[in-house]
Amino acid sequence: MANYYMALMNSGNEEKFKHYGNAALNCKAKLSAAEKLIKGTMVILMEKKDAYLTGVGKKLVEMYPKDVAAYYLLLDYQDRVGDINGSHETLLKALEITERPAPVYNMLGYSYMSLNQNDKAEVAFDKYIELVPDNPNIYDSRGDFYMNIKEYGKAYDTYIKSNALDPQWGLEKAKKAKHIFEVKEPAMVAVTALLDKYNSAFKAKDVATLAAFLAEDGLYCGTDPSEIWDKKQASVGFEEGLASISLVIDHTVDRREMLIAED
Image 1 (cartoon, rainbow, N blue to C red):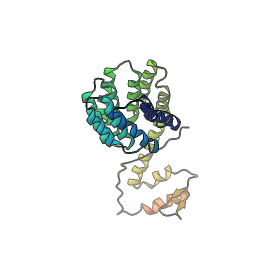
Image 2 (cartoon, rainbow, N blue to C red):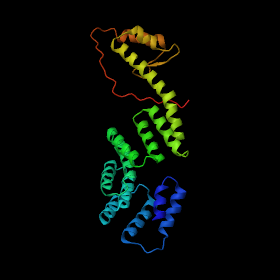
Image 3 (tube, helix red, strand yellow):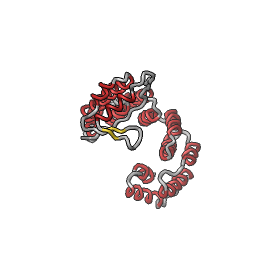
Image 4 (cartoon, rainbow, N blue to C red):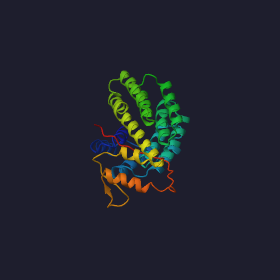
């Protein structure tokens, strides 16, 4: 079982995964019925790491309904096939029977985030902190939560708390949060403000303001491949296209994505 768990933990490292997986398969110890089931899954995982093994996991839970290890194995199998709702249900059941709820609350926090239930995720991470206040992982997880909700300043502070408890934790994540907070976030705010002004001018059919937004050396695309204009041509296009009194422009921007380069 030690080799089996090490194989699962190293699924992203092919060499280590095969090393521990083969060690688990070559074990000559006498196995229980459940261990035989588990060993059988390693044969399958060696061929296909995202194989559907949820049925085996559920069977293990049936065999050992009061053993949290069975729920953790089911959880791993569900995560491998992207069963978000199933894994969330498994965590809730594990919470009911475990004598060590702290790690379950940690995983539950991430589960709630994956379900876009950030309020419940925050409650779960708060409970995690309450149970093991000196564990650096709690602040690492809480930092991930703040990154998820785009509160990068708080994420930085929380990762630094993690690093203060153990220098092996949090520093690289803190650097990333700081970079986003100091560089990327202001850039995104600035671009958002400019695009909002541009859209407002477009709705108001304010040709002069629209033309002022255009770079002098820019090339501007129309609605078909032949329409590639310089600033002067694009400005004329605005004047002609927006001249009609009957034209009413009323649109809402409900999604905007920006990718900001690291440099």
